[in-house]
Length: 349
Image (cartoon, rainbow, N blue to C red):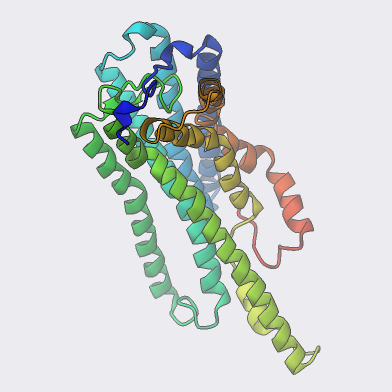
């Protein structure tokens, strides 16, 4: 069914945004920017003290860079929303387009880095726990060169791919004020486009990659857990075959060189889902309403409530990263050690 035949599919939500939503967005954005600066400071201080950053910590810094600009853009969007009358909110000015460009680009980069952290978590563990792995049969110089190539691939995927998508959206006039359809008090995809075009660009420039990030991270962490269980079972068979006095040399060697990850990096993905799930649900609800004419009677109220949560969640990622890796770092280390994983996964401080 054509989306244009669906009634009440283009209702503006801009007038339904309250001052509380704007204040929450601004306050959360400020907290996230401060949290990002704290992560930059602690990481830089380690380098200043002569300690090199572990690979996961570097990835966290790259992720935080994206989240910092995301919070900065949302803060500007909320300030702009206060200055622009809701009746004139569809005006497509340069400030709105610039804010949409920054926040959409930062969101895509954040999704990519979150997925890369999950992938590298699984891949590095696979390399270190397989006797015939890539790293088990090459010298240190070749290993270092391979890691550099891998890092370059990560950077291309996390910065270049989002840039291509966003510049394409910019040249096609897709960025602008969206009347808070699928967003909070900030600009995203222009409402001046057709309903079909707007839904497509919402998926291509954000929500599609967001949903892909949810399932890709889940898949990588499940693969890691399955491989971990398989490795433990394999070592137990070896131990039973050669006797209880036979040391598990292979397992000890692999675990001593295990990737420097810990529980907090897994929790980072869970927090990402909790923070952004309200926006994902809003996108799905809007798409169903526009293109399938599925619109429950409580749609308007549910959408507005989800928008309130999204005004907090979409801005809070860097702040939550700060809580996980700075404030509650010792708590996660305690849980990690109590579960008996220290011989399996080394701490990434």
